[in-house]
Length: 343
Image (cartoon, rainbow, N blue to C red; front, side, top):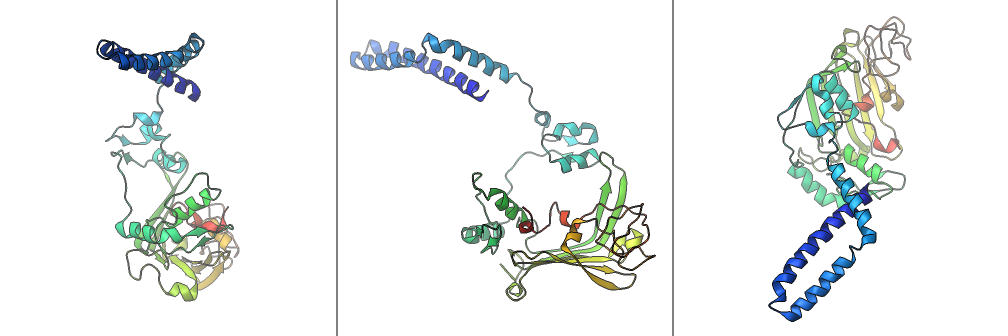
């Protein structure tokens, strides 16, 4: 299809060029015989390329190109500035959204279509990118080297064998939360696929994040000197859980190391017995709120096991829970796992 389209374009270009040459030929012939002869030779050379043995193929290509012009555009082309997308007309944006975002629209999230524009990163972030990105490298084992702040790889060659890893590094150090997060009464709601009805509603009293590297706006910048001694890239936590009621008072803390090959450290807190327990990094890929760390008969705890009405038993053998959790800490904010631990 591409070759046929290119052939059609070449045909139109040749015809257009010949038309221009013939017009110039007529205008010059009577005024400058020498110039007329040169122009005549050029016109003849152009005509050679339009011999009959090429004409059938070029004509077919032109017909195909015309036919392609009448093929309907994808549904996404129906979207216009100012449109409001709801579950009723979600099909308009299916080809324009990721599967996850499309599922949210089908479940009731509305979108107002705005004119396209170029989104700039904050000036301090851009300045850090310009200053530090030339020194950043990706080791053969996938570990990021010499990173300080800003976007690690502003230019990624698609032919680079490490292109995918560099894109994920850019995602990890995107300008969404370069310094700190301090949010209160954060809510998270889960839905069944294609349904606007809630399965579970989580509320966290406090969500906090502190980055030791990649800081661009809030002092200390661009790094917190503590990283040089503790080798910690970031700390994050959610505490206390306010709902569901069975998890009220529980919390989760995560710490990320700058060292290659070191998984995230995680701890969970139970308000029932005021215990803090270390979790394996694999627990961060499981449903939040599923395990019991308090022993039989209690359903508090966060981490191991999947919560649900059928039972939330985990490492501690807790009783059945009445909530359903599909909230995996690794997938918060789209993806928050340690990129170098994935391939």
